[in-house]
Length: 389
Image (tube, rainbow, N blue to C red; front, side):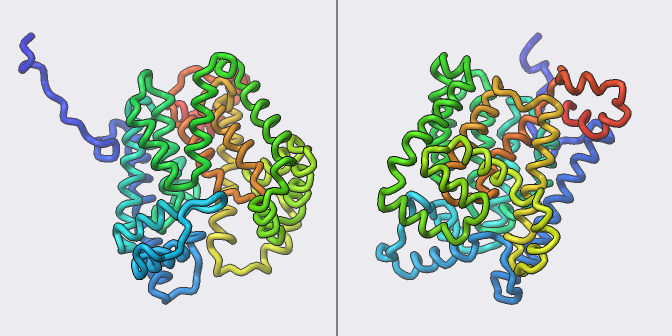
C-alpha cells in the first residue's frame, strides 16, 4: 500500500477527544466541571483575598511568596533573601510570581501545567481522565491550581517520574527536567528521586525493595543522633518545638535517642492521615480554631481524608506492592520525610499523586483480595471496578 493511501490521524489532546461511551462522557464532563470550579474559586475567593477584600488564607504560603517576589522586584540583586536552604525553598513560586506578575496568569499557567502533565503520560497507558478525577478529589490539587504555591511543581515533577519509570527507554532530558522542576518545589524531591533511581539501578536493591527501605531506616537511625547537636539542626528543632506537640514531640525525642523505627510509625501515620482519626480533636479543639485559615482548617483535612481513602482503595485492589517501582519510591519518600522534625501532611502530596496514577492504570488482573470479593461484585464494582477500566 502506498503511504499516502493510509488515512492520517490527527493527534488530539486527551481532554479534546470525543468520548466513545456514556462513562467516558461522564468522566470528561466531570473534569470540565472541576476546571470550572477552579475558576470559580479563583474569582470568588482567591482574587478577593489578593485584593484585600477577604481576610482568608487559601494557599498555605501564597502571600509569603508574593511578598518575597515584591521584595526582589523592588531590590534587585540586594534583597537579602535566601532562596534555597536546609529547611526552606523559595525558587519555584517566587520565580513564577516574578515572571508572570499576575495572579490570573499564574492560574492559567497552573491549569495548563496540570493538563499538559497528564497528557504527558499518554505512553504509559494510564486512563488520563480517571487520573485527573482522582487528583481532583484532593483539595490540595484545587488549591495548587488557583494559588501561587509549590505543589504545582511537585505535581508536574511527580507525574514526570511516573512516566520515567513506566516507559521502556526514558530519555535523559526527561530525567534532568524532572529533577529541575522538582527542585522548584523542594530540594528533597530531586534528592530522593536520585536515591530511588540508585536503588533501581543496582540489582540487590532492585530485587529486594525491602532491603532498600531497611537501609534507609538504618542510616537515619544511626546518623540522626550524631547530627542532632549540629547548630542548624538544633536551631530548627527549637523553631519547630512549639508547633509540634503530643505524639510528634514524643517521636522527635525517640528519634534523637536512636529509636527512629518507633518514631517512624508515629510520624508516618501523622503525615498520611493527619488528625483524621482523632476523635477528641473533632469533638472539641477543631471548633475553637480560626476558620479564616482555610488552608489549615479545611484544605489540609480534606487532603488527609482523600489520602486515607486512596490508600484503602489501593490496598484493596492490590496496587500497593513493593515490587512496583513507584511504590518503592513512595515508601522511601515517606521514610525520609518522616525524619523531618516538622510534620506537615501536604508534604506527602507526591505520594497521593503516585497512588492516583497507580489506580488509574489499566490492569486486567485483579488482586487476590478483589478476586475473593467477586461473589459480592454487585457491590464492589461501583466502588473499585472502574479503576481497572
